[in-house]
Amino acid sequence: MKNLAIARRYAKALMLIGKQDGQAEVYREELTGVAAMMAREKQLEQAVCNPLYAAAGRKRVLEALIGKLSLSPVMKAFLLLLFDRGRISLLEIINDNYQKLADELKGIARASVVSATELASETVEKIRVALSRRTGKNVVLQVEQDPRLIGGIVTRIGDLVLDGSIRTQILNMSESLKRGESA
Image: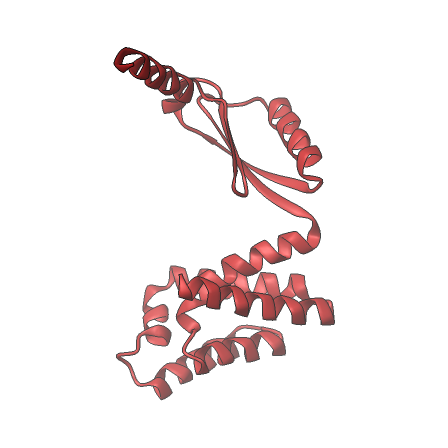
């Protein structure tokens, strides 16, 4: 939990710089790229983040990586700051938080819809528009299928979950019947 709060502070600091210099979207792309590379290349992540290796050697690896990528001066400084403060291992969490802040800045809300069967594109668009109206933001919708739902859909947007699945309705009825039997 402590790391999450720390990561959030670093993401907010980078966003503040991005707002001031108008480069928030550039930083989003750069941070996403570096975080994805570190997640994808486990050996690179170990070479930069593993405290069993000497700090000077790990920093040289990070500096070499930064030199190969065409990053903005602010992003280069940000990554080196994370390393110097012992926070480079939080890069993925910082990136997740920064993405949320960047979405907020652009008025974007991310939502997911899970359905038992494939939804028609018109239905997906109606759901997206309804969520946009409800949130007042432009909603980016991720659509998934899960046959275990039996029917209906489950929508998640932030902390809000709208569960209209048949599976949940059956579970709720089952719980009601159990309470009725034991009462």
